[in-house]
Length: 190
Image 1 (cartoon, rainbow, N blue to C red):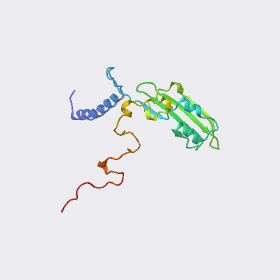
Image 2: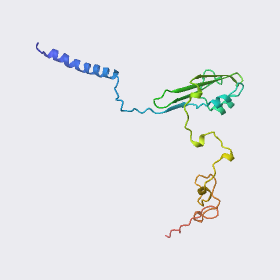
Image 3: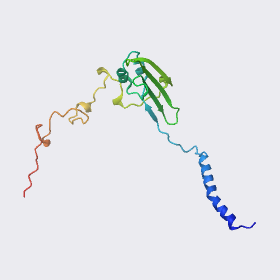
Image 4: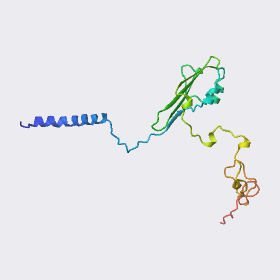
């Protein structure tokens, strides 16, 4: 078979089409990742963190303001029925673990009072533990259970940098008796 310029030209025209077709088919194939390579999947927490104690406080007849004080701002509000339905979504996925999702629906009557409470999804008793910073926890300790101050805290003469009150005495380097600061540098001569 002789190669004429016409058959060569057809083959050259078909080459880009075949290349695009093969590249598009490669995109459809799954990518093999060896087992020793660990793909990081971040933790995802969305919506409202719901605790069983909070949900138990919600009672039929409460106002929307009282519900919002207990549970916080709802994740979803029904735009077609304003002030009638609030949805609290608790979604938590830790890495490659199965996602936890719990939905709480608070339905209101025409007077703005709770008429019905519905829940769906995973039970709140199976919710993953939340890692709250110490300052955000609701665990208020009574005064008799408060941790005792250590010797370094009580005998320290240095002011506490975390205190929210001003120091009792002012330092002379800052201007003395608490009045406005006076310049201490000598005036420039001309």
